[in-house]
Image (cartoon, rainbow, N blue to C red):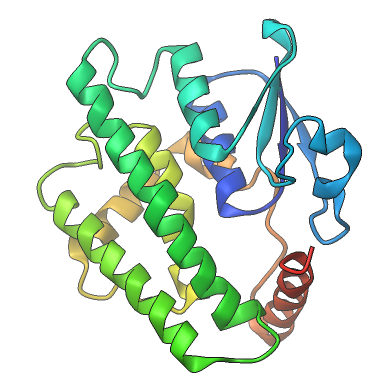
Length: 226
């Protein structure tokens, strides 16, 4: 059994998708980021960086893992699935595209979110910088997906890591127009039953309409100050 500490964020959804895809039993523990649950001593004992997601593997002497990419690798090794099984080159390709998300798509799109949605003052050069870089990274994904069905060839933890971020491109103010291969991939991932469950574990607060967007921006503004 896995204790799964998370919240309704793209990084959290990476792990919920993986747990569902791999069929690993878990106990969902939802943290309120705006209330600072991630900074409480009991959680910092699991993740000293005070960020979600994190897991504790009860079946492995309560072994704790933090950082979403590290969690995905741990779960893939535990389940023996979605990690280039039995082939060092395939495993390396999975890792390359996983690191592309961890070092590129996530940080750049995350900053696009901050400056486009959550920063108290709008600083247009920063908004443009991070939106443009996110779009460039999307173009890299699109080119890769013109050659293969999924990022590492076969469906893998690299896709699970990348999809929750690309899915919210509108929220980040980044278009996927003209990126036909990326759009094809988005629809293919979205159609997977485990992804559907994972993307509502936990449910995301309603961001539709002006009021929903304002409330989401207010929560985000508070979180980035913690």
